Amino acid sequence: MCGVPVYDSVEEATKHHEVGVAVLFTPAGATREAALEGLRAGLRKLVLLAEGVPVHDTMEILAEARAVGAQVLGPNTAGVAVPGEAMVGIIPAFIGEIFRPGEVGIVSRSGSLGTLACLYVARAGLGQSAFVGVGGDPIVGTTMQEVCAMLEKDERTRAVVLVGEIGGSQEEDAAEYVGSMRKPVVAMVVGREAPPGKRMGHAGAIVLGKRGSAESKIEALRAAGARVAEFPWEVGRAVLEALRH
Image 1 (cartoon, helix red, strand yellow):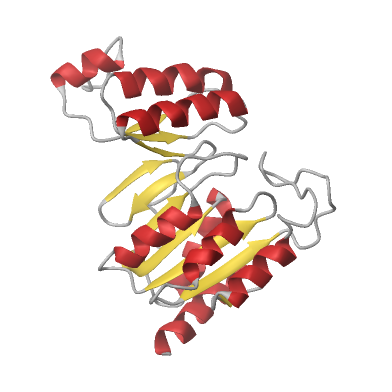
Image 2: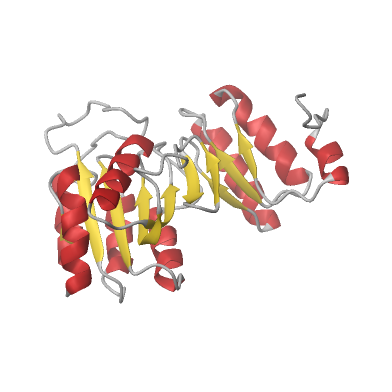
């Protein structure tokens, strides 16, 4: 199609090409079958875009991935990008006013809010070493804590921006690692006005009990030494201040 070869199966494609990563543009109900097909064909990096994948399907995908040593990003991720080099997913990494090569690593549960953080980082005269959307479903493959650890080891990254939202405990879990990081971390957590028990946006953005609220996440990140920006337009300035210190 348009000069690009199309195959009937992932296994057939891997016979003709070396496949480093696969992105799945599938409905939620078809994601399990597609992901398992990829893993069984030998793929070791999967990016799952669908939102609302049934939890048991996600658990089966992640169990299979662990068994074969594969890495899964998502479900409900916008993808991953290294500006100026590559992107996988639905991130508008081709827009130079937002995504530009630099030294700030950004990890976000939300693709749109993460992109907004990238915009204000760029407006501050900085760029991104990488953007990673971990996804907004209740259970995801690669966590914020794991991405923070990757960015801590990345030689090009000088500072990290963490964009969180209500629901789950990813941000609190990441805070446990942030406290040991040598690189400065700027965090923004949205959903402070969200009513308890009501899902806001993503499938995983719902506060149940005390853990998972914006306040608990902000408190944990501040206690770990992260600078917390209350609004997106404060992110770029906060990163500049963190780098100066």
